[in-house]
Length: 154
Image (cartoon, rainbow, N blue to C red):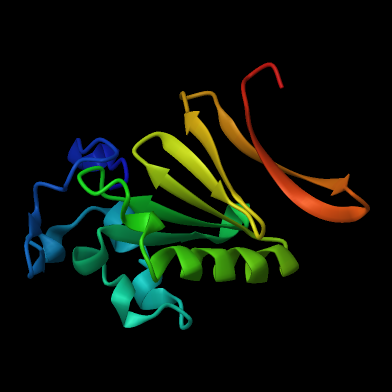
């Protein structure tokens, strides 16, 4: 579901080397970008077995450098993230992430939905120069986190 330039694979497309039920067809010769990738399903101890990518249609990408947890959704199953129990997991992760200075978001191709402790914010389709920005705000006397899309001029 990620853009893999070394394989000529655009974001949202299935890897041509993916063997259904068998994993990577070029595992021994896979490019460096694939060797260095750690799927959140395997790497994160709090992720339940129901998040196996082939079963749920989503792939968890822990982006520690940017303090974010991305969930990339198969474009063929764009509503998968909203289904129970996945959405409840996302909300729980967003609450925990907020306490640790991390954020959670869902990506369906270039469409980004910020998963906040109190709401989901559909920020629409992102261009190459757009970025996801999180900010703290006080609403009705309590501090909340907000998300927005920022362009090159922001």
